[in-house]
Length: 330
Ligand code: NDP
Image (cartoon, rainbow, N blue to C red; front, side, top):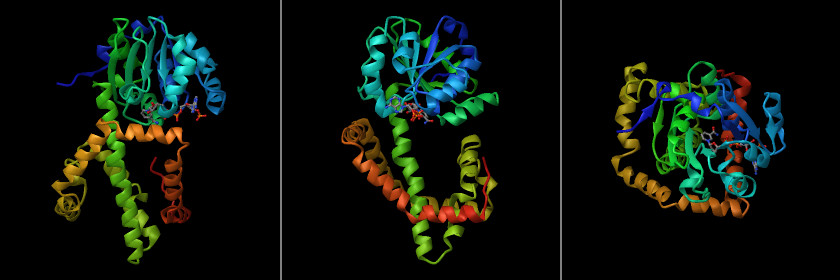
C-alpha cells in the first residue's frame, strides 16, 4: 500500500528555526522558493552570479554565492541541473554540511546512481514535483499544488520524515497529495517517461508529419491536425483529470471506434518486450553511465542530436503556421 500524505499530516512548526537555502534559482528553484516563503518559511537563495541571481534579488530574496548560502542554510534544496550537481556539491556545498542539516533533491538521479554520496550525519530527502517549475508556482498561487514523490534516504536527525512532510506542505504539494516512494523508484520512473513515453509521442508526430507531407498533405494543415491546435494537449489534460478511458466519451463515436480499433495494431502486446528492455537499461544504469560520459566529453552526441532536431523541416512548418494561425491555449 502506497502512503500518500496531505496537509493534515504535516506540521510547519517543525521548520520554525530552519533557514531554507534554495541552491539554484531556476525552473524549480524559483517556484519552490516563492511557495515556501509564502508558506511562512525563512528562505534564502544561492546561485551563480547571473540573471537568475538578479531575479532572486528582484523577487526580494537574500541571494548569495552558492557556498555562502550552503553555509547559512540549515535545509539545503539542491535545485541545480542534475549534471552539474556532483561538481557543485563537492566543491561548494559538502564542506558546509554539519549534523542537524538536511539536503533536499527534486530528482533522485545523483543519489540513486551514487554520483553524490552525502555524509551520514545529514538528512537526505527527496521532494520531486511531478510538474515543471512554472506550474509548481502557478498552481500554488491558485490555491492548489503539484503532486510530489517524497522519500527519506537518510534520517540522521531522527526527524527527517516530519521535516519532509512539512516541506511538502510548504511547496503546496500536500494540498493535492505527496506520495512516498524510494529514490530509486522516482529516478527510474522519471527516466522511463523520458525514454519511452515522450519519444513515442514526439517520434509518432514527426514521422507522421514526414509521411503525410510526402503524400501531398499541406504541412500547416498537418501540424494543426496533429498537435498545433492544442487539442492533443487538452486530451492529455482530460486523461489526467478524468482518465484514459473515461475521457473517451468527449470524442465522437466515430473517433472512439477509430482509436480503439487501431490501438493494438499501432502498438501490439509484443512491444512489451521492448518496453522491458528500456526499463532494464535504466535499472542497470546504462543510460546514467552514457550521460556521464557525454558530459565529460563536452556533449558531442547531445549537440549533434539537437542540431538535427532543430534542422528538421517541421520547425519551418511550425513557424509558417504561427504566421497564419494564432493559438492561445495557455
Ligand atoms: P535549471 O536548469 O532551471 O537550473 C537551475 C539553476 O542552476 C539556474 O539558476 C542555473 O543558472 C543554475 N546553474 C546552471 N549551471 C550551473 C553551474 N554549472 N553551476 C551552478 N549553477 C548552475 O534546473 P531545474 O530547475 O530544471 O532542475 C533542478 C532540479 O529539479 C533537477 O534535479 C531536476 O531534475 C529537478 N526537476 C526539474 C523539473 C523542471 O521543471 N525542470 C521538474 C521536476 C524536477 P542559469 O539560469 O544561469 O542557467
